[in-house]
Image (cartoon, rainbow, N blue to C red; front, side, top):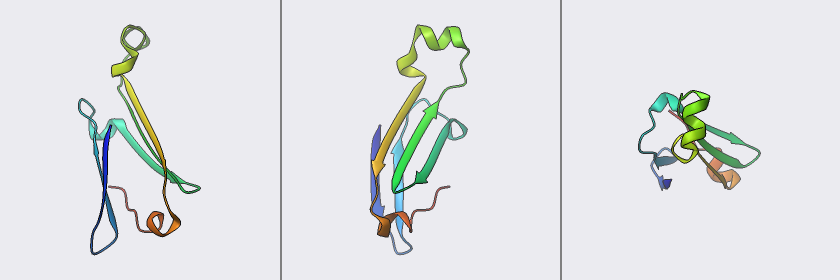
Length: 74
């Protein structure tokens, strides 16, 4: 999962490359200084068991408090 964070005039922008996932399949959360990005396909259990690597992705990174307060998810 390619992830870039860049500073803007208003704060920071997070850009995540998750090929094969739609926006509604991606969840971003910020809790206790940790930014979590999760993506999951809406596949049934049989499809997930056959190819689990392509059905989900997860990345967790620690974010400094000064950056965390300026992140906005869209």
